[in-house]
Length: 250
Image 1 (spheres, rainbow, N blue to C red):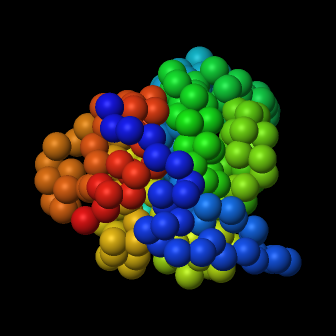
Image 2: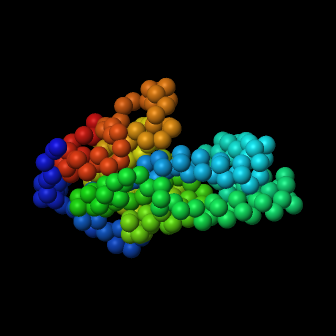
Image 3: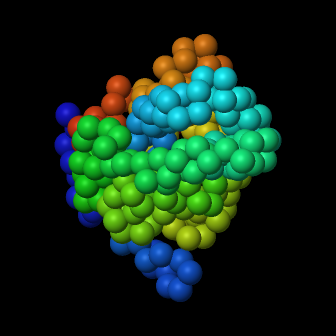
């Protein structure tokens, strides 16, 4: 395990910390940790499996399959998973089916906190000693914030939550809101880590937890450059010091 270094070592290497007011967030230490949500902090594959099982029980297998067809088409259109949007489109096809209300209730009131990965919150607490942890996620404007809130992540991150349609296209806005000398991006999708590395270069350390179906798809992962750090699970973040995380940036 690498030695944890203090903020003095960080500032000695990178210079005086910047302080911003107003719309910009004051950041002592000037190190920002950006965390994805789905399959990074929360086991979203299990959530999808629970939804699939619930749909089959409530509306039957043919209707359940139709929902996922709509879901995949909508994800292609939007570029992110929109569970409630797919349900709305499904409702257009079946406007008199009252069972859809039960499915909606299941989605909105899902116990997301039960699907947090082991030691995910410990990992956030660990990096909080070094800098500012921030959620940087993709998603719709209703269901994704609901997930962040009901899982307890909104409170864990003290309200520092950013949700975009395509986060890799909004890094300029991320910098404006959370200016830093160095970033650490933790995400299960190597495609996004590659895009973020292209934008920030050595200013960011890309951390790849091998969790979820995207991360475990070897053919998909092989299409992109290797991230700066690869972890088997999110809890392994706790093994690294501030300096080790910074030095890992290539």
